Image (cartoon, rainbow, N blue to C red; front, side, top):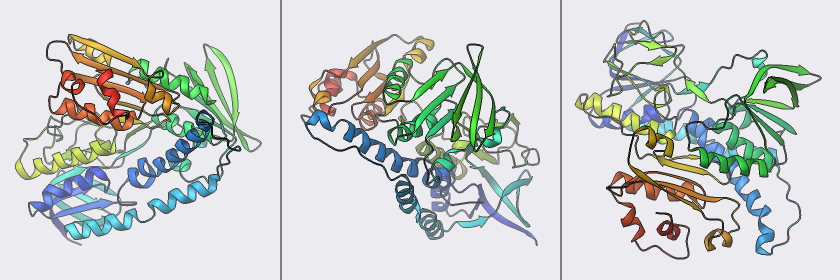
Length: 450
């Protein structure tokens, strides 16, 4: 078989790769997309979209828990776990087919199989060889490999979204986003959940005070959190799992019906034969310039979770893909700006953030002030019987620009976008304070936060 030629070959059919196809196809470039699994990648099929179905159930259970505050009497709720998993699968079932139709309508040729480099401008997919002026690495991420004896017993977030039986005792090795989000759902569904985190605290890159609120709420609903816990081995004993770890130098063991890898995800680039593509990398981290191009091969672009240096978020993957696509069409002229992109940890209630944390602002030497609000006593929080309602704003003193915002509860996963919009368009804290909001709403409380 001869060498096929395209203007652009995209390794990966997730959000990042699809973002690339918009500007490139609008410009009339020929585009091939290589995908070895479901189109859409992790987020819609095995990540944020199906996970949110489970989180919604967690929200419902949280509301039922608080029903007594509204003078509503309820019997003890029972969650049909198998039915919830079936609902989740039904809701996402049509996504790959719909995305395949979208790619066909866009004029993108989808190639099924595993892609790897066969040369600086050459991609191999099975027996097919595809040459392109631009090659995009958008292969997403995979669970972080843990140096633990018995690591083959670790389940992943894929398993958490597919297991139709909920174990009575669950352990997460690692206290990352996955552990906290699924842990909140599992605990509210009746499982005994333990999180073992090797570091002194959870979510080390996020605001410490915000994370502390999430930790307290997590423990309130029954999640046991053990920090500075070094997991040594996992053994299967009589059909269950025994996790051996050290805490403060003392050997400990815990037993569970399921043990999940909660240590996060890393770029999935191991099988790409990067050396053949003249793509420089260190320990699986591809070196890129400010325009998301390989520093050693400017014909190669990287975006999405395969780009290790940016947050692993679905909207960011799409954003980076579109930047790559525009740079392919227009030349290297567009750089990503992550300064006002919001992020959420979907615990119940959620932790939402945008911009700088207080610690990062101090590192940068910015002259700023901090506005903290514990809103549990506010009328809005009391009306909805919130268990956590807290916010922190970082405001530059001279300009009154908002540099960062952190929220836990109080509809923070929605309100954070108002702060992100203000940051992106130069709307000052004073302008937010002087705006008129609908009342009574959570948004109306912004006037008192800034």
